Image 1 (cartoon, rainbow, N blue to C red):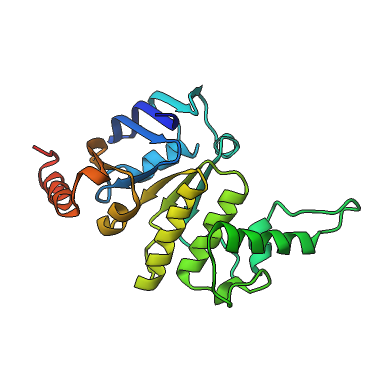
Image 2: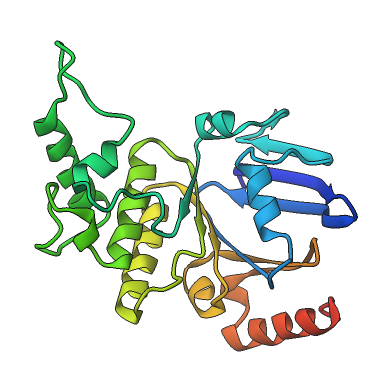
Length: 251
């Protein structure tokens, strides 16, 4: 398998707290990996290392087969890593096209914003790339009128448009209604259809199992288990996670 990301023997300590211990974690090209575990399992620390916010104390990281050292937030973005944090990254009072191109606006040859081009590209992205069909979702719609699921879709589309190869979804279904969750999961499938990769973090194992190709279970800073979703029924996975939560082991 070709890997977007490989992490070998990653460890991280904060004072007396061993947040991660000898973690091996991979994301394949065009793969959705579910990352699950209780609070304090080490998920947030792992993601902050991937995105360049924290440096590991030990271990090695590879992006697209090339070893990466001294990773920063800016460098992680150059390598194609984007994180979608629920709805917080959007400007609710701005239009859809402004949210898509915020900070990366398209200008004409005289330096003026090319609004027509940005609106046209926004419409192509929303309908063509991610399958938005609601008449309420237009390039000049104000984002605060969107549902929670639609807002998540906007963030995913923006990441895809700006060449993200690895999109991290951090608790994306939190606070969403059932119908919105279904749409969000369709957006995750859209990431795969676009040939990209995804780390899907969620407390709801039902959601993770429905979209992930592989699931990694973290517990107290260590990898407690790793499963190919197609090979393990949901009920069995839930039983194993309960066992991990109670004992720290799958045995």
